[in-house]
Image (cartoon, rainbow, N blue to C red; front, side, top):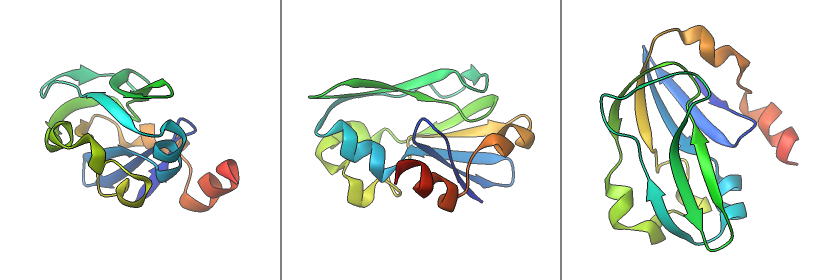
Length: 120
């Protein structure tokens, strides 16, 4: 199940693990990424918490958790190659994984069609 938030994060749920990234549209709007801050593994977060930060030459943008739970993994490889964060590979460049406390938290997210209508 792939879903999108109004804040341009994508979330993919597999069992109770949710992989989170930012959409190609968000990467395109940010431009060249110059700094990324990811959460610490083991951190407990609530739905809507700002858990990561993207900074570009244009702006800084908080990345929000789509659900409550515990951060189980972060994609620290992104920190080594910020130039690899492009709209073309945004869907492969996940940021963090969260063990979701309540999958119902994800029900408010949009499917791909609704998200495309939002950004269209």
